[in-house]
Length: 227
Image (cartoon, rainbow, N blue to C red; front, side, top):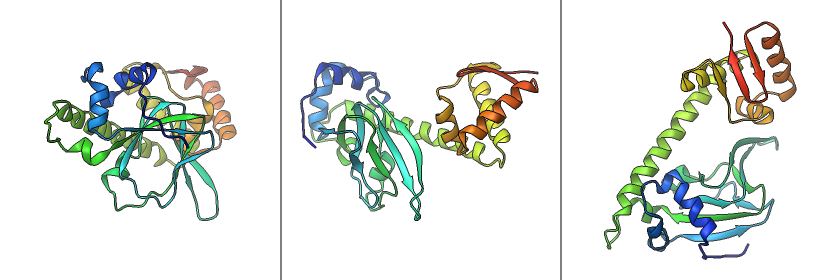
């Protein structure tokens, strides 16, 4: 794992587009990352970034590549909790609770560049009274709130016992969010099955049953709920 603190233009663009740095001037980013103890690390595909039992004090921010958040049972069965790409955060909840051991694994799915930010410096205003601190704290709170809402919506889906009921709960939520009976979802079939914690083949069979029964129509990731 090679350490690298060079923030190139491509990385700056990723930062500038991220919700974490909303309303923070691009020209301020370099100085801000120094203030926040920012450190960029490179990871090869398949390398663990966080491991089970780690205590975390830094937020991970993906600059390049993709990482997977995994959880493994006592018997070795592995499940995918999340896919994280450029501009997304990971580890922020555990960084807020530094005495809590991480109960999963974060693995580089591709070669990755990860920016780590010291949480204590992020949430506390510094001696220089940098004005971006207040904005960044507000941004981080919004991100945490949005993730909490997304988790609550997922729990609503998983509270149903059948694949059909989970699918209809998910599609109902998407239609309500879009305000339209026709909508696109940000997941492919495998990702949708992982999200709903169901077998992909069984889910696909259920999707076509719903289509044959005139309950919904779909083409790839575009769906329409029918009367």
